[in-house]
Amino acid sequence: MRALIKTTLADTAVEAIRGEITGRRWLVGEKLPNEASLSSMLSVSRGTVREAVRVLVSQGYLETRQGSGTYVRSNTDVRRPLDMARRAGLRDQFETRLALEVEAARLAALRHSPEVVLQLRALLVARGNYAGDTATFIERDLAFHRAVVAASQNSAMIEIYEFFSLSIAETIEATLGEDIPEPDMQAHIAIVDAIETGNPESADIAVRRFMAPIIATLDRLLMS
Image 1 (cartoon, rainbow, N blue to C red):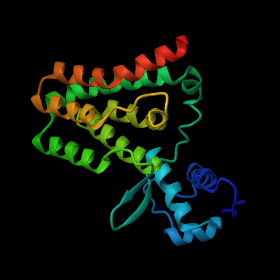
Image 2: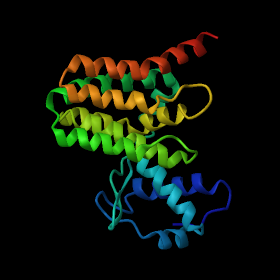
Image 3: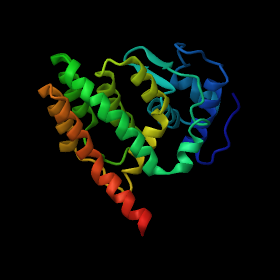
Image 4: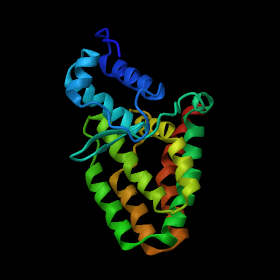
């Protein structure tokens, strides 16, 4: 792995580590070198490595295991097949996300256990509210939505959601700017509450209400 030219270091570190992952330097399930080793390989600070790892976790390439380290979750370059979706625009991305999350929430309402509801609520506590650390917030918000999809217990749906995880991370990031509204904590809690009722119609409505202000804003922006 070559040392980096010190411009836009976090983004460049992301690209360098991702290139090694997709190039199969580290296989799925394999543990990455520790933070100090990656810092030395890339000639950047440990803080920059930490930020790059957070981004790659949010994009689905890596996973962190507390007390153990960072492991490769996927070595498939999901960016290429998503180029067309990106060009189609954020609205298409949100519509796709809505379709997946509505059905996942409906199934979760039918199939969840009390433990799943507790997990979802704990993930929301960990998510908190956006306070300026973009990579961490995206990672935690995506972890919540992944858990909702996992609660569907539909392996094909979970796999599709993972395939689109980079696109979903982009939709989350888009809500952190000034143009598109970020669904607040209450909107997230409403999804969990609806799942807990066991009523798929309630779960359906909660997710649609969650997404409606975003899609309405995008419609308005596209018409302006």
